[in-house]
Image (cartoon, rainbow, N blue to C red; front, side, top):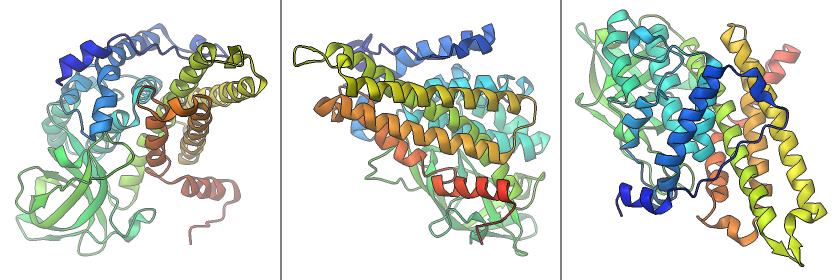
Length: 402
């Protein structure tokens, strides 16, 4: 079945209505609400009708990359002079929320492109690099990925063994990265590696460079509609003009991760909102013992706890967005939002799944897919426990990592 047939068959089935118990919409500008409405409409028309098929098939819907570019989902917070949206961070968060409301894997594609590929090129790249790559990445003409995690170095990125040597007119790159979103289809990769002195730098590696391969990771139970793979570098000759000149050390990749984690804090909340909305509508329609299950105390308890946690998380990301827009957000504040909102999303998804009973595990409803996806989201961009330690170090001044 092709994409148009899927869309035709499933059009109109997405009846999502966003919960807003504390009328947080009053904090948003008319422009922010207009952009949200535009992205939400696109999701309902183009993404919702096809996402279950692609998740079941464990296939990445590559045709959506240019469409994501067209709706401004790639680097919306970056300047218009490089072909980007020039929007504020709150708007960026709203876009991520609307995408992940449908699927974490699609939001991951956008997050990686905007925060982990485009952002470091914008923040640390030369003007030549910015003008060469950013417009094409913003439009979706090019797809990018971010190479930091290695097979033996996840939560400890400073232990990376991927390295490059100065060969006079080029660098020679060797090593491997693992669990890389977008890798199998990426045109460019922002790769972090150590030079001969052990100093970490960022390199832009382009598809077609000899010795650069991106084998796909198969048999995933999570993020099945997202492309995941490895980056393998076997004596890859990287031109010297592809070195990011504006940063050295772990500050480079960690700065990018802060931007991505911010987007995740909004995105995961979108998944929670979708699960709650699904469970609420189901509870009003599903009858047991002669009345809708929404009329039973245990179901009302579940729904009440869900909306309470969602509302707290909405206030958290709204305030964090204001801090980001004012340049005042700290890494620890971002860690708090990422950790908290992914945790509440997982809890909401699990409770919602139970409310739907057996139907909750089927592809007729999105909840089980959200549950599986969120098991990746709680791990990547800093695990749940690592974010607790980041917070612990911030509030105590003591480093528990070593």
